[in-house]
Length: 172
Image 1: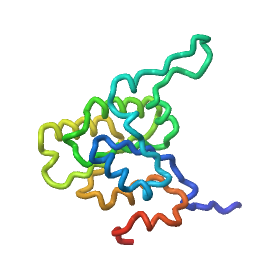
Image 2: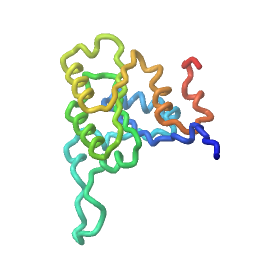
Image 3: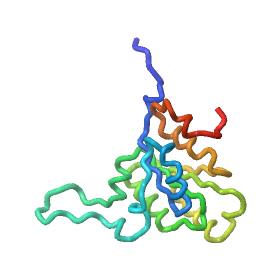
Image 4: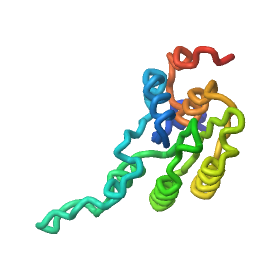
C-alpha cells in the first residue's frame, strides 16, 4: 500500500483577502511582502453599486456566462477572508453582498476582526459586527493585529520556506 504524504503542499489553498475599510487596506499595503501567495482584493470589489452589476453579454450572444468582477474573484478562491481593523467604518451592505456572492459560489467565507478595546461598542460597529456574523461562515476576533499574518498563512498552507521573515515578532 502506498504511503500517504501529508505535507503542507497537500492543502495549499487560494485565499482572497478583502480589506473592508481604509485602515485595513492600509495594513495590507504595509504588509504586502508578507502576504505573498495571498490575493488581496483592490477597491474594485468594494461597495459601489455598479461594481456588483453583471458584465454585459456581447451583442453576438456569444461569450461567458454573465457575472460581475466579484463573481470572478470568488470563483478563483478556495476561501475568502473579510478583514477589518475598524468595525465602525465597515459598509454593512457590502458585507451582505460579499456574503451572498460567497454563498452562491460555494466559497468558504471567513472574517478577521481586529478589535482592540471598546471600538465595537459604538452602534455602527455593533451593527457591522451583526452583519458580519450573518454573512460569514466563521469569524475570528483578535485583540491586535499581531497574529493576522500567521492566521492567513495557516489558511493558505502550502510551501512557505521564508514565511518566518513575514512573521517577525510572532513567537515560534
